[in-house]
Image (cartoon, rainbow, N blue to C red; front, side, top):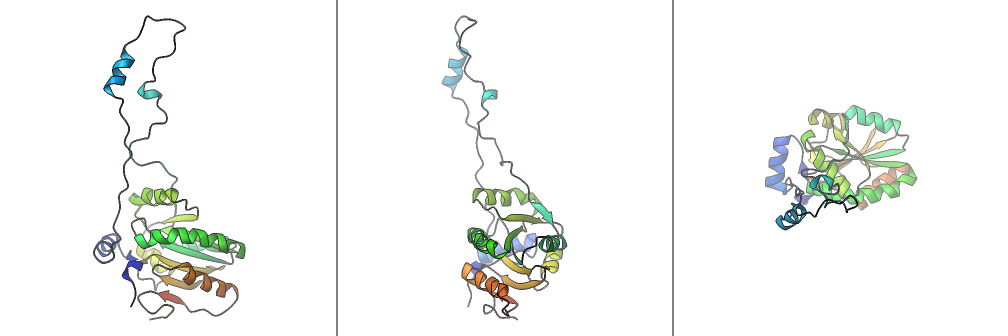
Length: 235
């Protein structure tokens, strides 16, 4: 038996939302909007009462235009994610010069995905000296890119990050034809961008690190871990 809260699904925007909301509880969450404070009536009245003009008098109280530190209304401007197709991502893996690359597919609306990110950030620091890079690929729709970027920024996730470009179905087929679309999902590629291992569902450090270390040591490893099955077993 496995825990369903380890999975979200990203087969399509409609199916993903329905499956997440009904079966797994991974709902879309809207962040709070920042609101600009409005000057009080008393402050406005005080600003309108002035003495006789004097050349050396102190400047008047700042106007609204002179409030550069006020929080803007609406979403904060953040850097955008680099868009990639599956082939472009694999080209990046080959060009990186890393012994191996751990790719994690996630979405801003997926609770298990969000839980994984701090662990992946820490794991990346441990793996970097061994020549292994950890990168993120968001499967959010382009209109939701700002949600993904804001989540990474707010949680201090500094891993190299991408956004899927084009069809999600094409991306899934290009990364791993056996990936049915559950999220999160992690993929270990060797330096030539050949898929070494696939984790279908939320994985923990003690499930990821031993596989990576075994690969680096040249030991044989199983092809995938899918949490709808016994861990480490194929269909």
